[in-house]
Amino acid sequence: QVQLKESGPGLVQPSETLSLTCTVSGFSLTSYSVSWVRQPSGKGPEWMGRMWYDGDTAYNSALKSRLSISRDTSKNQVFLKMNSLQTDDTGTYYCTRDREGSSYFDYWGQGVMVTVSS
Amino acid sequence: DIVLTQSPALAVSLEQRATISCKTSQNVDNYGISYMHWYQQKPGQQPKLLIYEGSNLASGIPARFSGSGSGTDFTLTIDPVEADDIATYYCQQSKDYPRTFGGGTKLELK
Image (tube, rainbow over all chains, first blue to last red):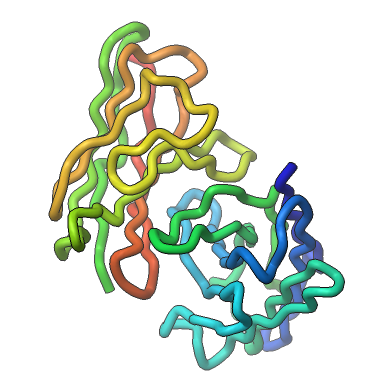
């Protein structure tokens, strides 16, 4: 069955870089796209960016200068790197399967809580 | 960016109908498809897809959930509401980048 699982550090120092990994199973990264979505506690989700099935990327313009998404198809992994973290980057980070055409998120990982604090 | 506006909360009685609205700052329809999707999120859990493309029920979702609307006005209906439906509901558009979500409507029991 389709599964996505995020991994990475739970605590990041201000101004440091966040590195997260999304490991997928049950589908191929060369057939489906994956998006990263984050959610501050008590607020609505925010779309961060997308790794297309063909290797192309799309980013939220609000984060584009700090964000990079890449992948390793041989390991079924998608990576997120975001630099210059601040306290308002604190929240839960999800990777999602992003359906082609209409771009809705039909499967979500369990999420990883990231706290930016010294 | 396309802004999605939802009422923060809605109080409903069990076995009654709940109607949750989402209004967008721009038309999210294109070539007959509404690029509007709905998710349910319970505390401590990830969001779950309920409705895609305005009115299509996602796999495994009970038929008491339905979606309607077009253009800039969309509705998620739950009829009848069951205890397990108490959660926060989000709308999301994919007509344009960046993909954006509403602020969520928390469904509460009267």
